[in-house]
Image (cartoon, rainbow, N blue to C red; front, side, top):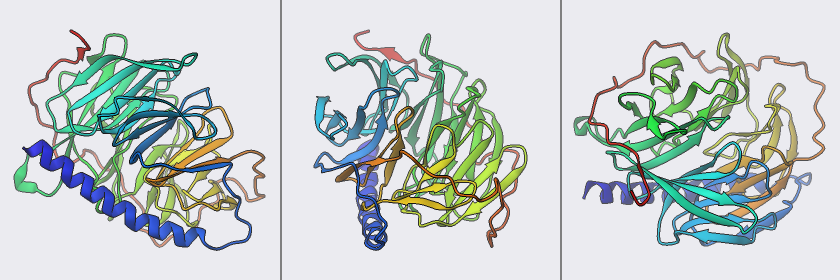
Length: 379
């Protein structure tokens, strides 16, 4: 009963938040004669919850309330699987041969093999844990590790704070990297935050995770110990690794860039659309706000788009394309021929926000629970 209630509660919260943010983003996109139309735009009734570009192909994977769907570059559906299932998140392996999808109603992650020539998705494995449901999944940059965040509310005395179980896996055997998982406080959709898992693009032993009240933390995948953290007086909307040495965060309507050795580098205040995710180009030079492309080091808006804004966004790893979804509207945007500004590199922006401080450990303290084994389909 608790799992059903949790899913319904989050579904209602998500619908309310999306409605509010879409209204805000429509206002943002209404003005400006310099706005660029999307390359392709479409309406979908699928109930989209997450998106991910294939690493090399012009194929967009969509996790929705009605299954997994693959779209081509014209936003036409080319494949749908498990259409009786709701999915919360997805991510491609580094080589694009596998797709992982988190179940939105059960504590499981489904792993699919992908054959682009047909195309086809074939489920080959199910990762099941003792939790409520799978919130977020992420593959490391070389495909050797995998992480999943599951929602669970174990400490009812601290409700309504939602708790998450963080697991890390070795993809050669699909065994857990640690004896146990780690318990973290996770974002709720109500304060306009969203769970994030983001692997360091160069150091595969580190995961980045947002937390509801505490800011964000980096974890060593082999131990799930906290290696670095930044606290906020308000929760970040989203965080992500930008480069191997820098972390980006959206909080309070601003974009923050941190160096993991030197703390805060700059703060930028462009017109943020309220995206739940941070999308940057492969080099970490530009960031997409949900309605505009901004040069990170200068904060200069290089291109604005005539779109209603993206809650879920993704910048293609190898093609100059950006995908943006606001639940019903999908858009593919042009990221070619971006002209950098003449602003000097890493010029700090003035900010009235208190400087974040390092902390030694996350809250709450990790607790031990029985560890079930990941199981293969048909075993």
